[in-house]
Each structure stands twice: as structure tokens, then as C-alpha cells.
Image (tube, rainbow, N blue to C red; front, side, top):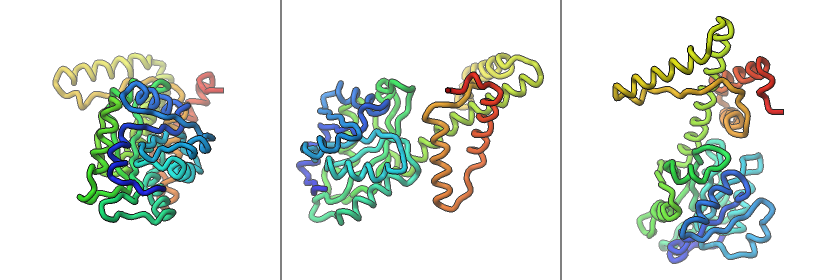
Amino acid sequence: MKHIDRLCMERAWKTAVVVGYMGEVGSSLFEVFDNSPLNVVGYDLGDEDLAHSSVHHSAVMHVAIPYSDTFVTTVVDWMTFVEPVATVIHSTVPVGTTWEIGIRILEADSMGIQDGTIRHPIMYHSPVMGRHPNLAGSLTTFEKIIGPGINPTPDSIDPRPDKFIEQHFLAAGMRPVFYKTATATELAKLASTTFYGLTIAYAQEVSRWCEEHKVSFQEVMDNTTRIYNEGYQALGCSRFTRPRLHPGYIGGHCVMPNLDLLDQVALERGLKPSELVDLIRKSNEQHAVDHPEEVDV
């Protein structure tokens, strides 16, 4: 990667390079940037030669490709092709991935910081919240949480990386909120989708209870939750409200695959996989047996 000087950094916030712009997350990011004053360039996997032939080292690269066993290597390769001032990973990844990518780049290029010149990968993780498949509206509605990876933070660097990234996101119409580390944002995303899966699994279990007792799920769960929520909201205690979810089969490419990412991290660190995760899987498997018509073919 090229060494990035202060002038290059000041220019970079005006240009976004989206890798994986054909997917749900990438296309939505591209749309948001394209409707902003920023310049935007989109690449899909397989476009490495096009990226390498262009000059993008005055840009922020946004990674929006699905996680896989080759994710870290792929992102490192794209950082080498594009040579961005900063890289923001929007993908849902195992905890520690952003840090690992930064370490790989440091080891490959032996970069450091000298005389205020950045010789260091500026890395961030920024998970996506919202309703699939069209996420553009969600990107500008929810606050965009951002966690720094192995970033240079000496006072000699001006503008500081966080301020530079904040300017970039604000210009695109997004509202950045910084967490202390990328580890926190990586875990926040996995915890969020796991909670969603847990609430559906609970609804599945209550549905089974209702079937056993021959009573209405609508009354036992849905109506009761509505009354409960409205009452606590009237009392000014909205923090106690509960989600109103129905006991459908958990499919798609979000909740269940993310449970695998949690297990992967646990196993890699010699830890016992979460029993809570296993409960969600078992409930969903039982729901598939009870309601095979709901399972995607």
C-alpha cells in the first residue's frame, strides 16, 4: 500500500469506493453515496483488474461482501488493489476480523508512523441495521455505529482519523456514532441478530404451548404483548416494552448464519459454544418439523 500523506487524507473523504456494490448491502451503500455530493465508484468481486488500473488511494473503501473463509484474504487483496486512505467493513463478521485484517496489512507492508505521515491501515467496522433487501432508507435513518480497528491516533496527525471518517459519513447523509473498538461493533451486530432470533424462538415455543392447550396464540402472545406494551408506555416506562413477533421459521442469510459466526469464534478460542445459540437452533429445527410448509425449498 502507498504511504498516505495529510493532503491525500483531506481529499479522500470526498470519494467512496464500494466493493460488493451488487449485493443488498453494497447496492444500498452505493445508492446512498450516489445520491450525495460525494463521488462513488462500485466494484464487484472479480473486478480486481479494473480497480488496480484506477487511482483510488485518495478514497475511502467500503467493504460489503458476505463473510466466508476467504474474507480476510479477499479484503487484504482489495486494500492492496485500491490503496485507500481508509477501509470500512460493513459486513457481518466474527469478532476480531477487523483487527486481523489490520494486522495482516501491517505485517505485509511493515508500515508505521513517521513525522506525521500515515504509514498505517486506517480500519473501521460499521455494521448495517435495517430492513432487507432495500437498505438505503435504513442507512440514513438509523445511527451508523462505527468501531475503529488498529488505527493511528497520535496528536501529530491532522485531521484525526475519526474526524475524517465522521466527515465522510455525514456528507453522505448518515449519522455516525463511534464505539471504542471494532470488536465492540462486530459483537454488537452478532448480539443484535441473536436477540432477534431468540425472540422468534420464544414465539415458536409459546406457539407449541398454545397448540398443546388448544388456545389461541393471537390471544396468549400477540394481544397480551400489545396490552402490556401500551400500559408500560402510558406509564412512561417504554424501556420495558417487548417485541411482537410471530412464530415463523427462521430462514434467510442473517440470523442463523450469524449464530455460526458466534460458534466459530468460541471454538477458535477454546471456549464452549453458547447454549443460548443452541436453543435457538433446536427450536427452529422443531418448528421446521411441525411446519414444513414454512421452510424455504
